[in-house]
Image 1 (cartoon, rainbow, N blue to C red):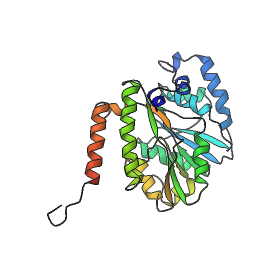
Image 2: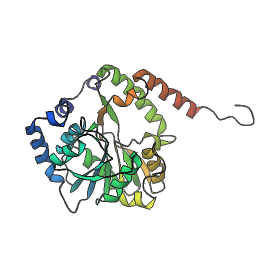
Image 3: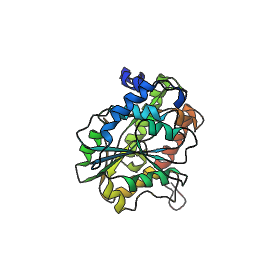
Image 4: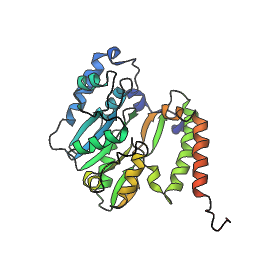
Length: 276
């Protein structure tokens, strides 16, 4: 229980400090490039796809964690560069990562381009500001071997930057309570773009990502995949991600209150004939 209030050492290892691409120790670049070479394959079973828009200052953390992935499956790594104006592309090239340029601005376009480019039977979706555990690939692919399951998703913890780890852990406890509730109703809302996976053929069958919506493309995809099978939570697939996401809602407690209010509204009795 108390371990939840600390950042694991393996996460700290990948969350090294650097100001920008030009300030990175060349030895770190070489280490990551060497370890990522295992993803250079022409016949992958698995495709890990990452959208990136101006992620020069965080992408190296993600690549570092992926470089330490241990998997029994042939895996490719693809980063879709969505009009980055910083040195995201230079960083990708330096690390020897396969990248695709997507000129249409928006997360749905980048995810769809990744889907169309991927060669693997299984597609794992990641983000450029998150850190992944070494068993992430196998945990998801093993679960997807069950043909009755069409989409798998994992949980997350926040890397402290704007808030303390203690405060973030308490926020996560609230989030996990909400996630447990959603398993009984609208489970697809638990699926987040930086940590879910599916069989590529199923995603193609239901039409791919909805490029007409630039928000909630992850939950929408999961909702559509329910036509092909069940959703499944994989508890071991816990990803560590930047707490900057919480700043978009005005800070951690504003984000917590906003989420709770939304869930309460969702489970409130519906009015019928003017009465409750």
